Every structure is written in C-alpha cells, then in structure tokens.
Image (cartoon, rainbow, N blue to C red; front, side, top):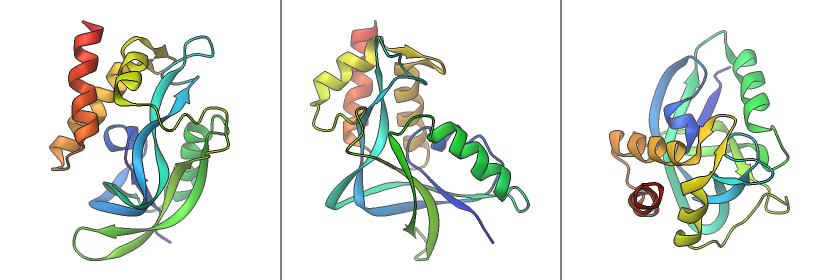
Amino acid sequence: MALWVFGYGSLLWNPGFDVAEQHVATLAGYRRSFCMRSIHHRGTLDQPGLVLALDPSPGASCSGLSLRAASGTEDATLAMLRERELISSAYVERVLTLDLAPGEQVEAVVYVVDTTCAQYCGGLNLEEQAQVIASAVGGRGPNPEYLYNTATRLTEIGLSDPDLDWLTHRVRVLAG
C-alpha cells in the first residue's frame, strides 16, 4: 500500500526519504504556524527555537506537498519519520485526507502539534516569532536556516505564505 506523507515545513526541502511522486496538496482544518518550541533540532532547552507545526484551526487550510515514498521503502520511511518527528511529545501522528491539486484525494501521514504539550506556544505574534528564530540554534542547525529553506521551497513550488515571507525579511534584519 502506498505511503503518502504531508510536507508543510522541513519535509518540503528535506524529506529524508526516497520520494517517488509529489503533488501540491491542501489539508483542511489546520494552519501552518511557528507554534512549537524546538528544544532539539532548531533550539535547546536553554534557548528554544521555533519550528512549524500544523495548528488546528476550524475553517483554515494549509498547502504543502503530498510526498509518496518509493515502493518497498514504506516501513523504513515510516520508522525514520517517527524517529525524526516524534523526538518529543510535541507532534502527534495522524492519517488525514489531503486534497491534491489535480482534484484527487489521498490519505497521508501528517504530523500535527499537540496543543496540550509544554512545547506548544500558539498565539505568538510575528515579531515575537522573529525574535526567537533570529538567534536560536539546535542540533540540526540555526533556526533562521529552517525558516529560509521552508520559505524558499514554498516559493519554488508556487505557494505563498505571507507570514513566512514577513518572517524571512524580519529575521534577515535581526540576524544581520
């Protein structure tokens, strides 16, 4: 059976698995947001960074990529994703319906934020987000790099995210 994964943040530019097929896709009921403190990948316990998560939001939607793992790699891909995405209790793995650009739907593995987790920080305004992102560094590198790579990839695939565009400009100013 095909394994589809929804990429909306780092999975857009660094899926970490062999992608056999991809389509622009939309997930209803969630919005992309820097609403999760990163204490491993893009920050530390002492200086958390921020990473994107899917924040439940009735009436909203998030556009990204549906990524199909290469045939025969499904089990290994899922194991790798769980190790990467479930490093703390901040994300919850779900199987949700994505609307694909060609008018089809697929069931995909999606990592959404657990709003009861201590790392959840929904409601930060854009300036607060920029201040955190500009100076945080974690095990996978500087937090600004994560923001820039995500914003660049969204542009490359023809998607716009005004919040990420604003944050990219502001963080470049703050980070010098």
